[in-house]
Length: 361
Image (cartoon, rainbow, N blue to C red; front, side, top):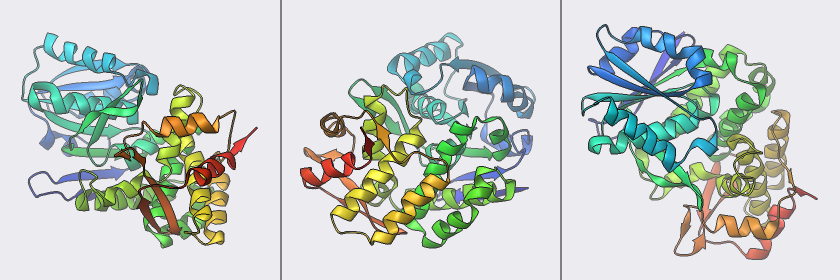
């Protein structure tokens, strides 16, 4: 099964998302988007599984070089970025090269930042191999590396030429990695689509079991929602900020645990729990909506609480988030299933209470 949607920008920069099962080896999908040379950024785990398949799908005569980077958020650094640039230069890649990200969100973010800046920008293809990357980070052109001061503080908006989302790669994903992606899928229902949220409530068991039909439907609808936000607000001047629901809290959780304890989707799941609590305390959301979100996250096998977090440290960490504007921490709050909005500030006591309500002492 193969399907596609288009991320609509300005015509010249529109690009397709191809998705389905076992599409990674389809040479007809990749060939139109590469030139005479490619530079593949991946990691050892993914390379052992899928690198040969990718190389076999490249057009005859295309030169390919490979850089295998470290795994996880701890590898998403300026040092990794610089090492990839060194490798590109050493291998004498020029402006006709295409950088291909083969891996999860970390690989995609770093490779995209490399593509955005190498020789002022070269071709870029996203081949995400995790659920989270397929429905979120591979679509929309956000690229970045982390800094000691916070997550994704150094980066650029740079759109790929192609996203190739093969759900067959989920067969090799550990349970935690897979479920972390389900968190971002649930987010799309909360922020934009009441009917999709209801579908998720009915099909969460099928998703947990990785039923292929359910997974493809979830990936497709998530990408449709993400593409629509990107089309209307490519550089996050307003509406696209809705996609950050749960992320202000989630990024702080990741930072305080040194990007080691929680996967990104798990931290976002806990963050969505905190965001729903804040929405309730601000009297923005019906009580049943808060319960439905918490219940769905829990049924999906995701955490909605954390232990050992210091509320004051959370507040401080959120102060360095990219979403802080003019010294004010903005929050995305829920108005009801399928609708959110951005508020410029929230009373400190309510923010603290919302964090504390999801922290187990």
